Length: 318
Image (cartoon, rainbow, N blue to C red):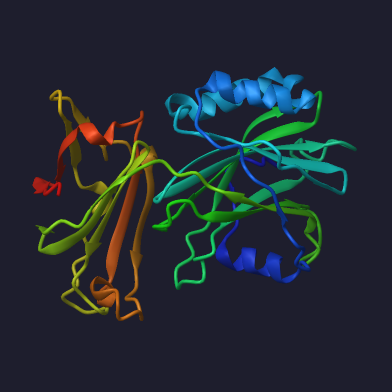
């Protein structure tokens, strides 16, 4: 039984959360600032002798962050332990379209992280009481058998405009062989204050395939677009769903470089339709609308972007 790419469905997550008595989350603060990977590792080394003893996990974290090390947020000072298992977040990467959290999990009394049990992670925000819950994907990046420690990456789309929101992270250890309702053998939670990268936001007056493009956000990490579908009911016979996720999108940089955003399937973070909002302040949300997000291969200097072309339509950058 592998623990990689485990995702809790909304129904399964709700069932787990109903069966667990809420515990008061431990509120600790993150180390402030951004740093190159050398600085990240230096912080981890001075904070934890255990981290210094596992170079394989440090290397795995470096590989996972890849080109986005400078945009990442090192984390120290958050440790929670229960049932012989210690959980410690070590880094994060986030903007208003996406959040990734990297977590070390050590079994101090056995080898429950070797694949015998499942691990699932949920990242939640205060604004998650809306009609659409986007969910969290988690995967194991690396496992050190000698110390019984695993490194996990948890990722979720955000769609939250708050500059630096507080997120609650919950880690579940599940026994796949247990009877229904008895699967959860561990539950750890903590709150973190995300430090998001700076972004450029646009509310362009543009139309794509007859539908209105009403918002574009671009950060060094990702690009997010919102398009109004123009209907209040997608079951209407004249509703023609547009596959925005597969539209060609390019960025033109000041030096003439062209970045093809949507050509890699694995870079797409989210492609979802949202129902109309009941909030009368959100005029554009009286219709169904589509939201699509892509992560870049490497950081983009947003100040150097001179043009965004979506399916042949130039987005006004103002």
